[in-house]
Image (cartoon, rainbow, N blue to C red):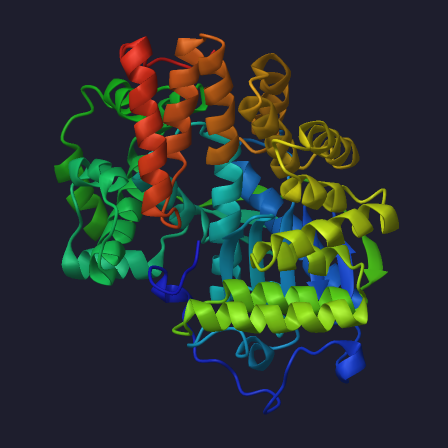
Length: 494
Protein backbone atom coordinates (compact mmCIF):
# COMPACT_ATOMS: atom_id res chain seq x y z
CA UNK A 1 0.00 0.00 0.00
CA UNK A 2 1.19 3.53 -0.74
CA UNK A 3 0.00 5.84 1.98
CA UNK A 4 0.23 9.18 0.17
CA UNK A 5 -3.56 9.42 -0.25
CA UNK A 6 -5.39 7.52 2.41
CA UNK A 7 -3.40 7.53 5.61
CA UNK A 8 -3.16 11.23 6.23
CA UNK A 9 -2.02 10.60 9.78
CA UNK A 10 1.31 9.50 8.38
CA UNK A 11 2.07 12.75 6.57
CA UNK A 12 4.60 14.88 8.40
CA UNK A 13 6.78 17.86 7.67
CA UNK A 14 10.20 16.47 6.86
CA UNK A 15 12.95 17.41 9.26
CA UNK A 16 15.87 19.44 8.02
CA UNK A 17 19.03 17.30 8.14
CA UNK A 18 22.01 18.00 5.86
CA UNK A 19 21.11 20.07 2.81
CA UNK A 20 21.65 18.19 -0.43
CA UNK A 21 22.10 14.88 1.36
CA UNK A 22 21.93 11.87 -0.98
CA UNK A 23 22.11 8.15 -0.34
CA UNK A 24 25.09 7.45 -2.59
CA UNK A 25 27.20 4.34 -3.05
CA UNK A 26 30.67 4.24 -1.44
CA UNK A 27 32.49 4.79 -4.75
CA UNK A 28 30.65 8.10 -5.16
CA UNK A 29 31.56 9.25 -1.67
CA UNK A 30 28.60 7.72 0.15
CA UNK A 31 28.64 5.76 3.35
CA UNK A 32 29.12 2.02 3.54
CA UNK A 33 25.89 0.08 3.00
CA UNK A 34 25.06 -3.18 4.71
CA UNK A 35 22.36 -5.83 4.73
CA UNK A 36 21.03 -7.04 8.07
CA UNK A 37 18.88 -10.16 7.92
CA UNK A 38 16.71 -11.25 10.85
CA UNK A 39 14.19 -14.08 10.76
CA UNK A 40 11.41 -11.95 9.24
CA UNK A 41 13.11 -8.79 7.92
CA UNK A 42 15.87 -7.99 5.45
CA UNK A 43 17.14 -4.44 6.05
CA UNK A 44 19.42 -2.77 3.50
CA UNK A 45 20.78 0.51 4.79
CA UNK A 46 23.50 3.14 4.91
CA UNK A 47 23.12 3.37 8.68
CA UNK A 48 25.70 1.55 10.74
CA UNK A 49 25.21 -2.21 11.05
CA UNK A 50 24.58 -1.70 14.78
CA UNK A 51 21.73 0.73 14.08
CA UNK A 52 20.27 -1.56 11.42
CA UNK A 53 20.45 -4.50 13.81
CA UNK A 54 18.57 -2.48 16.41
CA UNK A 55 15.89 -1.68 13.83
CA UNK A 56 15.55 -5.32 12.80
CA UNK A 57 15.04 -6.41 16.39
CA UNK A 58 12.54 -3.61 17.00
CA UNK A 59 10.59 -4.69 13.91
CA UNK A 60 10.63 -8.28 15.15
CA UNK A 61 9.10 -7.07 18.43
CA UNK A 62 6.45 -5.08 16.60
CA UNK A 63 5.60 -8.08 14.45
CA UNK A 64 5.33 -10.30 17.52
CA UNK A 65 3.04 -7.80 19.21
CA UNK A 66 0.71 -7.81 16.19
CA UNK A 67 0.57 -11.58 16.19
CA UNK A 68 -1.03 -11.46 19.64
CA UNK A 69 -4.24 -10.40 17.88
CA UNK A 70 -4.54 -14.05 16.84
CA UNK A 71 -2.94 -15.80 19.80
CA UNK A 72 0.46 -16.42 21.32
CA UNK A 73 1.35 -19.43 19.15
CA UNK A 74 0.67 -17.94 15.73
CA UNK A 75 3.91 -17.36 13.79
CA UNK A 76 3.58 -17.58 9.98
CA UNK A 77 6.54 -17.69 7.59
CA UNK A 78 7.67 -14.82 5.42
CA UNK A 79 10.09 -11.91 5.29
CA UNK A 80 9.72 -8.21 4.44
CA UNK A 81 12.31 -6.14 2.57
CA UNK A 82 13.20 -2.81 4.18
CA UNK A 83 15.36 -0.04 2.73
CA UNK A 84 16.40 2.20 5.60
CA UNK A 85 17.95 5.57 4.74
CA UNK A 86 19.93 7.66 7.22
CA UNK A 87 17.47 10.57 7.34
CA UNK A 88 14.41 12.05 5.69
CA UNK A 89 16.56 14.42 3.64
CA UNK A 90 17.98 11.42 1.80
CA UNK A 91 14.43 10.19 1.26
CA UNK A 92 13.56 13.38 -0.65
CA UNK A 93 15.46 12.21 -3.72
CA UNK A 94 12.95 9.41 -4.27
CA UNK A 95 9.63 11.01 -3.26
CA UNK A 96 7.78 14.27 -3.75
CA UNK A 97 5.90 15.51 -0.71
CA UNK A 98 6.17 15.40 3.04
CA UNK A 99 6.25 11.71 3.87
CA UNK A 100 8.03 9.64 6.48
CA UNK A 101 8.31 6.68 4.09
CA UNK A 102 6.32 4.52 1.76
CA UNK A 103 5.33 0.93 1.09
CA UNK A 104 5.14 -0.51 -2.41
CA UNK A 105 4.11 -3.88 -3.85
CA UNK A 106 6.93 -5.09 -6.13
CA UNK A 107 7.71 -8.19 -8.15
CA UNK A 108 9.93 -9.31 -5.27
CA UNK A 109 7.22 -8.76 -2.66
CA UNK A 110 6.39 -5.91 -0.31
CA UNK A 111 9.03 -3.16 -0.08
CA UNK A 112 9.10 -0.84 2.94
CA UNK A 113 11.20 2.32 2.60
CA UNK A 114 11.77 4.59 5.59
CA UNK A 115 14.26 7.00 7.10
CA UNK A 116 16.47 6.05 10.01
CA UNK A 117 16.34 9.14 12.18
CA UNK A 118 14.10 7.25 14.55
CA UNK A 119 15.54 3.84 13.98
CA UNK A 120 14.46 2.73 17.44
CA UNK A 121 10.73 2.57 16.88
CA UNK A 122 8.65 4.98 18.88
CA UNK A 123 4.94 5.60 19.21
CA UNK A 124 4.55 7.85 16.19
CA UNK A 125 3.64 8.07 12.50
CA UNK A 126 6.70 6.09 11.39
CA UNK A 127 5.60 3.13 13.48
CA UNK A 128 2.00 3.39 12.25
CA UNK A 129 3.24 3.21 8.66
CA UNK A 130 5.18 0.05 9.40
CA UNK A 131 2.52 -1.48 11.60
CA UNK A 132 -0.31 -0.99 9.10
CA UNK A 133 1.58 -2.83 6.39
CA UNK A 134 2.74 -5.59 8.73
CA UNK A 135 -0.86 -6.06 9.84
CA UNK A 136 -1.87 -6.60 6.21
CA UNK A 137 0.96 -9.09 5.69
CA UNK A 138 0.06 -11.10 8.78
CA UNK A 139 -3.72 -11.01 8.38
CA UNK A 140 -3.40 -12.63 4.96
CA UNK A 141 -2.00 -15.69 6.71
CA UNK A 142 -5.09 -15.87 8.94
CA UNK A 143 -8.10 -14.62 7.01
CA UNK A 144 -7.99 -16.64 3.81
CA UNK A 145 -10.85 -14.60 2.41
CA UNK A 146 -11.22 -10.91 3.17
CA UNK A 147 -13.62 -8.21 2.15
CA UNK A 148 -11.80 -4.96 1.53
CA UNK A 149 -13.52 -3.06 4.33
CA UNK A 150 -12.58 -5.71 6.87
CA UNK A 151 -8.96 -5.92 5.66
CA UNK A 152 -8.45 -2.16 5.82
CA UNK A 153 -10.44 -1.69 9.01
CA UNK A 154 -8.46 -4.40 10.78
CA UNK A 155 -5.13 -3.00 9.56
CA UNK A 156 -6.08 0.43 10.92
CA UNK A 157 -7.22 -1.11 14.20
CA UNK A 158 -3.87 -2.87 14.55
CA UNK A 159 -1.69 0.03 13.38
CA UNK A 160 -1.99 1.66 16.84
CA UNK A 161 -0.28 -1.37 18.41
CA UNK A 162 2.97 -0.60 20.18
CA UNK A 163 5.47 -2.15 22.57
CA UNK A 164 6.09 -0.50 25.95
CA UNK A 165 9.87 -0.24 26.22
CA UNK A 166 9.87 -0.13 30.02
CA UNK A 167 7.92 -3.36 30.53
CA UNK A 168 8.23 -5.12 27.15
CA UNK A 169 4.46 -5.41 26.96
CA UNK A 170 2.34 -5.18 23.84
CA UNK A 171 -0.54 -2.71 23.80
CA UNK A 172 -3.38 -3.36 21.35
CA UNK A 173 -6.73 -1.74 20.77
CA UNK A 174 -6.10 1.98 21.15
CA UNK A 175 -8.38 4.20 19.09
CA UNK A 176 -7.13 5.41 15.74
CA UNK A 177 -7.27 9.14 16.51
CA UNK A 178 -7.46 10.39 12.94
CA UNK A 179 -10.22 8.01 11.89
CA UNK A 180 -12.13 8.68 15.09
CA UNK A 181 -11.92 12.43 14.52
CA UNK A 182 -13.09 11.97 10.94
CA UNK A 183 -16.19 9.92 11.76
CA UNK A 184 -17.16 12.25 14.59
CA UNK A 185 -16.97 15.21 12.26
CA UNK A 186 -18.26 13.71 9.00
CA UNK A 187 -20.13 10.56 10.00
CA UNK A 188 -19.52 7.12 8.49
CA UNK A 189 -20.75 4.76 5.84
CA UNK A 190 -23.20 2.01 6.66
CA UNK A 191 -21.70 -1.47 6.64
CA UNK A 192 -23.84 -2.35 3.59
CA UNK A 193 -22.10 0.47 1.69
CA UNK A 194 -18.72 -0.88 2.78
CA UNK A 195 -19.50 -4.29 1.33
CA UNK A 196 -19.75 -2.59 -2.07
CA UNK A 197 -16.17 -1.30 -1.74
CA UNK A 198 -14.81 -4.45 -3.40
CA UNK A 199 -16.62 -3.55 -6.62
CA UNK A 200 -15.41 0.07 -6.82
CA UNK A 201 -12.58 0.46 -9.31
CA UNK A 202 -11.77 4.14 -8.72
CA UNK A 203 -12.62 6.70 -6.05
CA UNK A 204 -11.67 10.27 -5.22
CA UNK A 205 -9.34 11.03 -2.33
CA UNK A 206 -12.33 12.19 -0.26
CA UNK A 207 -14.28 9.00 -0.95
CA UNK A 208 -11.23 6.91 -0.12
CA UNK A 209 -10.73 8.67 3.20
CA UNK A 210 -14.41 8.17 4.02
CA UNK A 211 -14.19 4.44 3.29
CA UNK A 212 -11.05 3.96 5.37
CA UNK A 213 -12.40 5.84 8.37
CA UNK A 214 -15.73 4.01 8.15
CA UNK A 215 -13.99 0.63 7.91
CA UNK A 216 -11.94 1.41 11.00
CA UNK A 217 -14.91 2.51 13.12
CA UNK A 218 -16.92 -0.59 12.25
CA UNK A 219 -14.05 -2.96 13.05
CA UNK A 220 -13.17 -1.11 16.27
CA UNK A 221 -16.80 -1.20 17.37
CA UNK A 222 -17.33 -4.87 16.53
CA UNK A 223 -14.16 -6.01 18.29
CA UNK A 224 -15.15 -4.10 21.42
CA UNK A 225 -18.90 -4.66 21.57
CA UNK A 226 -19.43 -7.93 19.70
CA UNK A 227 -16.21 -9.78 20.45
CA UNK A 228 -17.52 -13.34 20.19
CA UNK A 229 -19.36 -12.65 16.94
CA UNK A 230 -16.30 -10.96 15.44
CA UNK A 231 -14.17 -13.96 16.48
CA UNK A 232 -16.67 -16.25 14.77
CA UNK A 233 -16.45 -14.12 11.61
CA UNK A 234 -12.65 -14.44 11.63
CA UNK A 235 -12.87 -18.17 12.24
CA UNK A 236 -15.13 -18.62 9.25
CA UNK A 237 -12.90 -16.47 7.05
CA UNK A 238 -9.91 -18.53 8.22
CA UNK A 239 -11.78 -21.53 6.78
CA UNK A 240 -12.09 -19.59 3.49
CA UNK A 241 -15.86 -19.22 3.70
CA UNK A 242 -17.57 -16.62 1.56
CA UNK A 243 -17.14 -13.29 3.44
CA UNK A 244 -20.72 -12.07 3.11
CA UNK A 245 -22.17 -15.45 4.07
CA UNK A 246 -19.79 -15.62 7.04
CA UNK A 247 -20.94 -12.16 8.12
CA UNK A 248 -24.62 -13.05 7.82
CA UNK A 249 -24.15 -16.12 10.02
CA UNK A 250 -21.89 -14.50 12.62
CA UNK A 251 -24.06 -11.41 13.05
CA UNK A 252 -27.50 -12.95 12.66
CA UNK A 253 -29.87 -11.56 15.32
CA UNK A 254 -27.14 -9.21 16.59
CA UNK A 255 -29.63 -6.46 17.33
CA UNK A 256 -29.38 -2.82 16.32
CA UNK A 257 -25.76 -2.65 15.19
CA UNK A 258 -26.15 0.75 13.59
CA UNK A 259 -27.78 2.42 16.56
CA UNK A 260 -25.34 0.88 19.00
CA UNK A 261 -22.43 2.04 16.84
CA UNK A 262 -23.56 5.65 17.08
CA UNK A 263 -23.65 5.40 20.87
CA UNK A 264 -20.23 3.74 20.88
CA UNK A 265 -18.61 6.44 18.73
CA UNK A 266 -19.59 9.20 21.10
CA UNK A 267 -19.03 7.32 24.33
CA UNK A 268 -15.27 7.14 23.84
CA UNK A 269 -15.13 3.79 25.68
CA UNK A 270 -13.09 0.92 24.31
CA UNK A 271 -10.97 -1.92 25.65
CA UNK A 272 -7.19 -1.62 25.51
CA UNK A 273 -5.26 -4.88 25.88
CA UNK A 274 -1.85 -4.95 27.54
CA UNK A 275 -0.17 -8.33 27.13
CA UNK A 276 3.29 -9.73 27.87
CA UNK A 277 5.41 -9.77 24.72
CA UNK A 278 6.51 -13.34 23.90
CA UNK A 279 10.18 -13.93 23.07
CA UNK A 280 11.31 -12.67 19.68
CA UNK A 281 14.12 -14.06 17.48
CA UNK A 282 17.36 -12.16 18.04
CA UNK A 283 19.70 -13.84 15.57
CA UNK A 284 20.85 -11.58 12.72
CA UNK A 285 23.40 -11.85 9.94
CA UNK A 286 25.26 -8.85 8.55
CA UNK A 287 27.04 -8.43 5.23
CA UNK A 288 28.46 -5.43 3.43
CA UNK A 289 26.85 -4.43 0.13
CA UNK A 290 28.94 -3.47 -2.87
CA UNK A 291 28.37 -0.40 -5.01
CA UNK A 292 26.42 -2.30 -7.67
CA UNK A 293 23.96 -3.51 -5.03
CA UNK A 294 23.50 0.08 -3.87
CA UNK A 295 22.70 1.25 -7.39
CA UNK A 296 20.10 -1.51 -7.62
CA UNK A 297 18.55 -0.30 -4.36
CA UNK A 298 18.54 3.29 -5.58
CA UNK A 299 16.91 2.15 -8.80
CA UNK A 300 14.18 0.32 -6.88
CA UNK A 301 13.44 3.42 -4.81
CA UNK A 302 13.28 5.62 -7.92
CA UNK A 303 10.98 3.16 -9.66
CA UNK A 304 8.56 2.66 -6.75
CA UNK A 305 8.76 6.07 -5.05
CA UNK A 306 5.68 8.19 -4.41
CA UNK A 307 4.68 11.70 -5.40
CA UNK A 308 3.99 13.71 -8.54
CA UNK A 309 7.04 12.68 -10.58
CA UNK A 310 5.91 11.14 -13.93
CA UNK A 311 6.39 7.40 -14.22
CA UNK A 312 8.53 7.78 -17.33
CA UNK A 313 10.96 9.96 -15.38
CA UNK A 314 11.07 7.36 -12.61
CA UNK A 315 11.92 4.70 -15.17
CA UNK A 316 14.66 6.88 -16.68
CA UNK A 317 16.22 7.45 -13.27
CA UNK A 318 16.07 3.74 -12.49
CA UNK A 319 17.72 2.95 -15.82
CA UNK A 320 20.52 5.38 -15.04
CA UNK A 321 21.17 3.46 -11.82
CA UNK A 322 21.19 0.20 -13.80
CA UNK A 323 23.75 1.57 -16.23
CA UNK A 324 26.05 2.69 -13.44
CA UNK A 325 25.53 -0.54 -11.52
CA UNK A 326 26.55 -2.62 -14.55
CA UNK A 327 29.69 -0.52 -14.90
CA UNK A 328 30.51 -1.32 -11.28
CA UNK A 329 29.78 -5.05 -11.68
CA UNK A 330 28.67 -6.49 -15.05
CA UNK A 331 27.52 -9.73 -13.38
CA UNK A 332 25.57 -8.22 -10.49
CA UNK A 333 22.39 -10.26 -10.06
CA UNK A 334 20.60 -7.45 -8.22
CA UNK A 335 21.22 -4.99 -11.04
CA UNK A 336 20.31 -7.53 -13.73
CA UNK A 337 16.97 -8.29 -12.03
CA UNK A 338 16.10 -4.59 -11.95
CA UNK A 339 17.23 -4.11 -15.55
CA UNK A 340 14.89 -6.87 -16.71
CA UNK A 341 11.96 -5.24 -14.89
CA UNK A 342 12.54 -2.04 -16.85
CA UNK A 343 11.88 -3.96 -20.10
CA UNK A 344 14.63 -2.67 -22.36
CA UNK A 345 16.17 -5.32 -24.62
CA UNK A 346 14.99 -8.93 -24.12
CA UNK A 347 17.92 -10.41 -26.07
CA UNK A 348 20.35 -8.37 -24.01
CA UNK A 349 18.74 -9.68 -20.81
CA UNK A 350 18.91 -13.26 -22.08
CA UNK A 351 22.61 -12.97 -22.86
CA UNK A 352 23.22 -11.40 -19.45
CA UNK A 353 21.20 -14.13 -17.70
CA UNK A 354 23.27 -16.86 -19.38
CA UNK A 355 26.39 -15.16 -18.06
CA UNK A 356 24.87 -14.76 -14.61
CA UNK A 357 24.10 -18.45 -14.10
CA UNK A 358 27.73 -19.22 -14.96
CA UNK A 359 29.05 -16.54 -12.61
CA UNK A 360 26.50 -17.26 -9.83
CA UNK A 361 25.34 -20.88 -10.27
CA UNK A 362 24.01 -20.99 -6.69
CA UNK A 363 21.87 -17.84 -6.95
CA UNK A 364 18.25 -18.74 -7.62
CA UNK A 365 17.52 -15.22 -8.86
CA UNK A 366 19.92 -15.73 -11.77
CA UNK A 367 18.19 -18.97 -12.82
CA UNK A 368 14.81 -17.29 -12.49
CA UNK A 369 15.98 -14.45 -14.72
CA UNK A 370 17.23 -16.95 -17.30
CA UNK A 371 13.89 -18.74 -17.31
CA UNK A 372 12.05 -15.45 -17.80
CA UNK A 373 13.90 -14.79 -21.06
CA UNK A 374 14.08 -18.21 -22.65
CA UNK A 375 11.65 -18.91 -25.47
CA UNK A 376 8.76 -21.16 -24.48
CA UNK A 377 8.46 -22.69 -27.95
CA UNK A 378 12.08 -23.40 -28.80
CA UNK A 379 13.65 -23.78 -25.34
CA UNK A 380 10.86 -25.27 -23.25
CA UNK A 381 13.00 -27.94 -21.60
CA UNK A 382 15.77 -25.48 -20.73
CA UNK A 383 13.15 -23.11 -19.32
CA UNK A 384 11.66 -25.82 -17.13
CA UNK A 385 15.09 -26.84 -15.88
CA UNK A 386 15.92 -23.21 -15.04
CA UNK A 387 12.60 -22.84 -13.18
CA UNK A 388 13.27 -26.04 -11.26
CA UNK A 389 16.81 -24.96 -10.37
CA UNK A 390 15.58 -21.59 -9.10
CA UNK A 391 12.99 -23.34 -6.93
CA UNK A 392 15.62 -25.73 -5.55
CA UNK A 393 17.85 -22.82 -4.56
CA UNK A 394 15.02 -20.68 -3.17
CA UNK A 395 12.53 -23.24 -1.79
CA UNK A 396 10.79 -20.72 0.49
CA UNK A 397 10.33 -17.98 -2.11
CA UNK A 398 6.64 -18.06 -3.02
CA UNK A 399 7.19 -15.96 -6.15
CA UNK A 400 9.81 -18.39 -7.51
CA UNK A 401 7.54 -21.34 -6.78
CA UNK A 402 4.61 -19.56 -8.41
CA UNK A 403 6.70 -19.04 -11.54
CA UNK A 404 7.48 -22.77 -11.69
CA UNK A 405 3.79 -23.56 -11.16
CA UNK A 406 2.88 -21.13 -13.95
CA UNK A 407 5.24 -22.97 -16.29
CA UNK A 408 3.53 -26.27 -15.51
CA UNK A 409 0.12 -24.68 -15.99
CA UNK A 410 1.08 -23.15 -19.35
CA UNK A 411 2.59 -26.42 -20.58
CA UNK A 412 -0.49 -28.45 -19.59
CA UNK A 413 1.19 -30.29 -16.73
CA UNK A 414 -1.30 -29.59 -13.90
CA UNK A 415 -0.44 -32.79 -12.03
CA UNK A 416 3.14 -31.56 -11.60
CA UNK A 417 2.16 -27.94 -11.07
CA UNK A 418 -0.59 -28.27 -8.49
CA UNK A 419 1.67 -29.35 -5.57
CA UNK A 420 4.07 -26.50 -6.38
CA UNK A 421 1.23 -23.98 -6.47
CA UNK A 422 -0.10 -25.29 -3.17
CA UNK A 423 3.31 -24.74 -1.58
CA UNK A 424 3.44 -21.19 -2.98
CA UNK A 425 0.02 -20.51 -1.45
CA UNK A 426 1.10 -21.99 1.88
CA UNK A 427 3.98 -19.52 1.97
CA UNK A 428 1.89 -16.58 0.76
CA UNK A 429 -1.82 -17.24 1.43
CA UNK A 430 -2.75 -13.71 0.38
CA UNK A 431 -0.99 -13.69 -2.99
CA UNK A 432 -3.67 -13.42 -5.70
CA UNK A 433 -1.27 -14.65 -8.38
CA UNK A 434 -0.40 -17.87 -6.56
CA UNK A 435 -4.06 -18.43 -5.68
CA UNK A 436 -5.09 -17.94 -9.30
CA UNK A 437 -2.48 -20.44 -10.48
CA UNK A 438 -3.68 -23.06 -8.03
CA UNK A 439 -7.25 -22.35 -9.10
CA UNK A 440 -6.37 -22.70 -12.79
CA UNK A 441 -4.72 -26.10 -12.34
CA UNK A 442 -7.52 -27.31 -10.10
CA UNK A 443 -9.90 -26.31 -12.89
CA UNK A 444 -7.76 -28.19 -15.43
CA UNK A 445 -8.06 -31.29 -13.25
CA UNK A 446 -11.88 -30.87 -12.96
CA UNK A 447 -11.72 -29.97 -9.26
CA UNK A 448 -14.48 -27.42 -9.58
CA UNK A 449 -15.17 -26.69 -5.93
CA UNK A 450 -11.49 -26.13 -5.21
CA UNK A 451 -11.03 -23.96 -8.31
CA UNK A 452 -14.01 -21.74 -7.50
CA UNK A 453 -13.02 -21.31 -3.88
CA UNK A 454 -9.43 -20.40 -4.75
CA UNK A 455 -10.44 -17.97 -7.49
CA UNK A 456 -12.83 -16.22 -5.09
CA UNK A 457 -10.03 -16.03 -2.53
CA UNK A 458 -7.79 -14.43 -5.16
CA UNK A 459 -10.40 -11.77 -5.88
CA UNK A 460 -10.85 -11.07 -2.16
CA UNK A 461 -7.12 -10.35 -1.84
CA UNK A 462 -7.12 -7.63 -4.51
CA UNK A 463 -6.97 -4.32 -2.74
CA UNK A 464 -6.16 -0.71 -3.55
CA UNK A 465 -2.91 -1.18 -5.50
CA UNK A 466 -4.37 -3.65 -8.02
CA UNK A 467 -4.68 -2.43 -11.64
CA UNK A 468 -8.25 -2.47 -12.90
CA UNK A 469 -7.18 -4.63 -15.85
CA UNK A 470 -5.91 -7.41 -13.57
CA UNK A 471 -9.01 -7.19 -11.40
CA UNK A 472 -11.17 -7.64 -14.51
CA UNK A 473 -9.02 -10.54 -15.68
CA UNK A 474 -9.60 -12.43 -12.44
CA UNK A 475 -13.33 -11.70 -12.49
CA UNK A 476 -13.61 -12.94 -16.06
CA UNK A 477 -11.80 -16.14 -15.09
CA UNK A 478 -14.18 -16.67 -12.17
CA UNK A 479 -17.11 -16.29 -14.56
CA UNK A 480 -15.53 -18.91 -16.82
CA UNK A 481 -15.22 -21.31 -13.90
CA UNK A 482 -18.79 -20.64 -12.81
CA UNK A 483 -20.08 -21.25 -16.35
CA UNK A 484 -18.67 -24.78 -16.23
CA UNK A 485 -18.96 -25.59 -12.54
CA UNK A 486 -22.05 -23.69 -11.46
CA UNK A 487 -22.22 -21.05 -8.75
CA UNK A 488 -23.52 -23.02 -5.78
CA UNK A 489 -20.18 -24.05 -4.27
CA UNK A 490 -19.63 -21.16 -1.89
CA UNK A 491 -18.31 -23.05 1.10
CA UNK A 492 -14.79 -23.59 2.37
CA UNK A 493 -11.90 -24.52 0.14
CA UNK A 494 -11.00 -28.21 0.64
